[in-house]
Length: 380
Image (cartoon, rainbow, N blue to C red; front, side):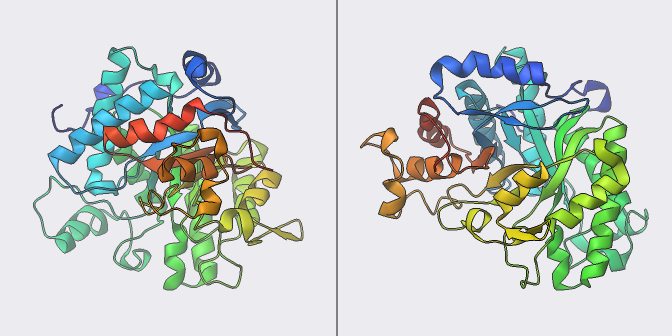
């Protein structure tokens, strides 16, 4: 496979994931999938609810190289064939290379008859500064020329040398993501780790910036550039309220309701979850209607779907897994690997719609996707 290049606007793939399309994908895979592999991501409205796989493929890890691009392209193609219809990315992943390779994989998979556009849910994110690996320019000059002089953000809006929530900047990054991936509409667009700013900016300012970002996302939905949006966090939604990086989900959702009304398009949150980073299910971090509860419970009460990241903790849970975790998945059989047991732990946790896995090697796709054949009923 050739190294990825950006699509021109005239070659954007039209459409987005739909209820009918994702249901068709599930039907194609059902004979080889255990009960519970496909779940409903509740979007409602014009988009409709989507049928999504319990596993999704992430594209964060790996150096900026042509060889890694080719590995990811092969892995994504194989994942789609085996029953994954959720792809996760961000403009800053591997300096745009991950988005660019998705822009190559999707049209090839469609041409080969592996998928139709309306069967696959493509996610990306904006917030962290995205450098273009093809630009041979000093980073400071790049920031000044690309963002400051063009008034996409002011210097005081650029936090920690890496993060920005300016509405103009987020819209610019969305256009970049659409172009990189060659998509008319991105299915889910996440505001990326806004809690990053809480280390340097007053909480009231950060929450105001999040509200401005949500207003921008609602506008982008109305323009058909994204189907829905959400907030992807690392610490924000899972840490205790006393933690400086805590974000109040119920309050943030109220911004979307204030701006978009009951038909707002804020539908999804993302947070890490695995047997080590388990706070999303165990830490009562989120106040909802006066009661504190873990993120997964809070999202359910608020009508939001949860996609989780770090399912095998960047590979750290693929060996020497806690025996107690291994013992929770006897349905996988005695030959189950630690990675498979860790995956099963995550995807059978009540309240999780899709568990993301970074898989750049086909051998890992084969191993990890083997769990798709087994039931994935929520653990009680």
